[in-house]
Amino acid sequence: MGAAGTDSFRRQHSCVAVLVALIVHQASGQGSALQTYPVDWSAVPLNPPTSRNLTTSCNCDLLNVGCSFGCCCDSKCPAAVTNLFQSDGICLPSGTEQQTLRYCVPDGFVYKVNLPASTDFFVQPVEQADNAKFLSQLLCIVSDKNPNVGDTYPDPQSGNTGDNAKLAQCPAAASPPSTPVQYAFQSIVQIYAAGSSAKQPFTVPYPAFSSMCNDQFAVGYLVPTPTGNRDYYATCERDLKTLNLSVACSGFGILTPQFYSEMRILTGQGSSSVAPVTTVSVQYLDPVTGALSTRASNATSKYNATSGLCSNIVRYLNMTLYYTYADPYGFIDKVELTLVLTDILVSNSPLLQSVRVSWIDSSQAASVQFVSSGNPGYINGFPVLAGTQVTDPSGAVAIQRLVSGMPVPTPGPNGLCNATSFGTVKYGVNFTSSCSISLTALQLKEFCINQTNQPEKYLRLAMPTLLLSIENGSLYLGEWGDADFSNINDWVQVSVSGVPFNETVPIYSEADMACSGLVIGFDLQIVTGVAFSSNNLQQKVLYAKLCFTTGVWDIPDQLPETTPNRFFLKFNVSFIRLPQQAVSVKKPAPPLVVPLPADIFYPFVISDSAAGASRLCIAIVVLAAAALSLALQHF
Ligand SMILES: *[C@@H]1O[C@H](CO)[C@@H](O)[C@H](O)[C@H]1NC(C)=O
Ligand SMILES: *[C@@H]1O[C@H](CO)[C@@H](O)[C@H](O)[C@H]1NC(C)=O
Ligand SMILES: *[C@@H]1O[C@H](CO)[C@@H](O)[C@H](O)[C@H]1NC(C)=O
Ligand SMILES: *[C@@H]1O[C@H](CO)[C@@H](O)[C@H](O)[C@H]1NC(C)=O
Ligand SMILES: *[C@@H]1O[C@H](CO)[C@@H](O)[C@H](O)[C@H]1NC(C)=O
Ligand SMILES: *[C@@H]1O[C@H](CO)[C@@H](O)[C@H](O)[C@H]1NC(C)=O
Ligand SMILES: *[C@@H]1O[C@H](CO)[C@@H](O)[C@H](O)[C@H]1NC(C)=O
Ligand SMILES: *[C@@H]1O[C@H](CO)[C@@H](O)[C@H](O)[C@H]1NC(C)=O
Ligand SMILES: *[C@@H]1O[C@H](CO)[C@@H](O)[C@H](O)[C@H]1NC(C)=O
Ligand SMILES: *[C@@H]1O[C@H](CO)[C@@H](O)[C@H](O)[C@H]1NC(C)=O
Ligand SMILES: *[C@@H]1O[C@H](CO)[C@@H](O)[C@H](O)[C@H]1NC(C)=O
Image (cartoon, rainbow, N blue to C red; front, top):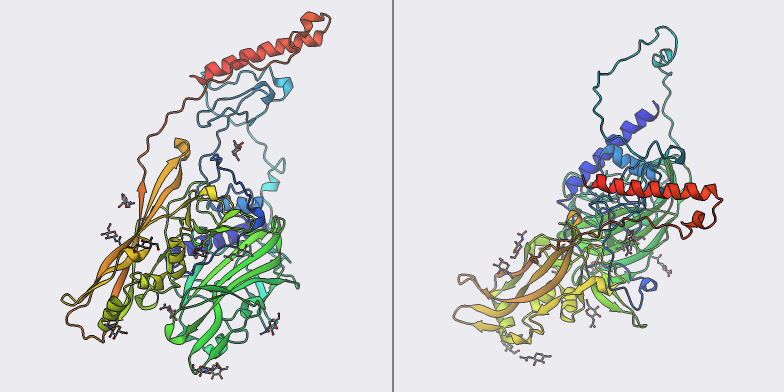
């Protein structure tokens, strides 16, 4: 058994994890509320910096705290976990690596090196020779022209000598594998379920193999959900008609917050102690207006069999597990829980449930975990960061970041517009979306004749808070994929045309049975550009313009006045690339002269020091070597 056995076990599991992550991408990312990250004012300076450093070589590190799964250059990942990513071949693209150079002299003799892909000179010792070998290693043999006569092997001795016997040994007697007290990477996290004392795997609702919630999806130690950073949550649909709601929506039922908050997570798989679970925040999502409000952390669910209403059930689950890991095993120290609850009528099934499980090293400072869409430039297909500008009484300005990025209304239940149903604008992806409003001919007519002061009425129903922040000019987009909430200079304000809405007035035409002059959507144009050196281009948002569009809603002639008809709101998002001309940059020539010590002419002033003479001698040799290596670089 031993190391080889566990290794192949781990490999199989990470393959499964990656496979599941691929399947899930299609299902997640729709149907979100406008959740925001909390603003930590203590991190917001009054005068944030205006310039930024674009030097980067780890593009996949998208979390400010915690290890980005599969990111082999992320210094926040335990070394052993990075090794597993590497041996499983799941390393994500990390960007251009810093160029390195092998040279045969000690690094103290090399002053600066001019490497083609770096914008500056730097010294990076890779293979140092020791001082004694300095002269013999001054020149290295790059290739030689001696004829090669091929490899020969000396005849090895036979019999029980040397390593012969070691290579043919009887296998050790098989012994049953023992379960360590701790967790190994990817081993299944164990819990005692709420109100039970039986040990069982920790499962979360997850869209494995279809968009329906699968309750058999077990969480692996140090494996986040979702596995990548493109989406904050993995979202699945739950068919309420298959559940006994008087059980699922009350007590410790599967839809209740107590199912998670009263769960006891074992600190190790063979351990008997449990990690404390802290409920950090509980919010309530109003299913009609999409507004979020704070709830007590002990809020409980209820089921009303008469009306078929399940109240206070889990819509969003954000679980953060803090760990300590020493290769190859580790523990879970504590658990933090953030929940968003909502109400749903059985007739509005399916219920969407969104889940996030993340892992943070206990030794890392406790702070809000943010997910970026690039480091620093945007990655194509990742959410465009968005947020509203907020001001502290002290005058500091920050961005309250929307968790899922820039929202666009998408169809909710039955294709209708719904204030809780939003998709996300993904960088570089042109996107059109529409949702419908159901009105009878009479309702439309009444609106068009008697409510002419609010042409945007139906748009406001679909996106109440988003429309407010667009109107009052507080909506911003992140310039860079890692725009910092505490630095307003990393964000660009969305320019808006078409507000206030008093410029257009709905007009009803009796002849055409049509209402014109309605505000029926928006067109968001995002201008993008690239920056930095040609071998490591970084993409950014330069400008954003949101134009409200007006249109006509026609009532089909043959339709009876009291039959509901669908009218559509439409949303367009397009990315326009700024035409850019590359600037050709020539590096300055590397310095030809090694800076010499001030006392370089010392022996000529005081003559009897042999040591001084040999130092000068070395300095001259180094000068020669530097010139020679320069000359060689040009060939
Ligand atoms: C930019 O960041 C790189 C890598 O973190 C660092 O080596 C370099 O010194 C920084 N440059 C400036 C001007 O801060
Ligand atoms: C649901 O569960 C409750 C309690 O266990 C039980 O009394 C009831 O009959 C169940 N309802 C259905 C439809 O199975
Ligand atoms: C949105 O859908 C929910 C059901 O998921 C429903 O209760 C709510 O009334 C809908 N909101 C609007 C504005 O239609
Ligand atoms: C929740 O906690 C508050 C005090 O923190 C208490 O007054 C209330 O009764 C609790 N509610 C439930 C349902 O336990
Ligand atoms: C259950 O719903 C019905 C119908 O809406 C309502 O009359 C009743 O008061 C509700 N029961 C409870 C316990 O809230
Ligand atoms: C999720 O939980 C972590 C840890 O408690 C917290 O930093 C983060 O802000 C939470 N995310 C949201 C959207 O509330
Ligand atoms: C508009 O409002 C007036 C007064 O409230 C009402 O008499 C009239 O019927 C309404 N028009 C339509 C088309 O509903
Ligand atoms: C702008 O609208 C947002 C709603 O998204 C609100 O929270 C904020 O207070 C408003 N700001 C101003 C200056 O009215
Ligand atoms: C629209 O409202 C703005 C400010 O409320 C006002 O300045 C403008 O004159 C109004 N325009 C029309 C056409 O009424
Ligand atoms: C969306 O874009 C399409 C094609 O570019 C255009 O035909 C349509 O009018 C646009 N719709 C809106 C609401 O801007
Ligand atoms: C997105 O739309 C813009 C403007 O219509 C167009 O210039 C651009 O080529 C489109 N991009 C893609 C990827 O289709």
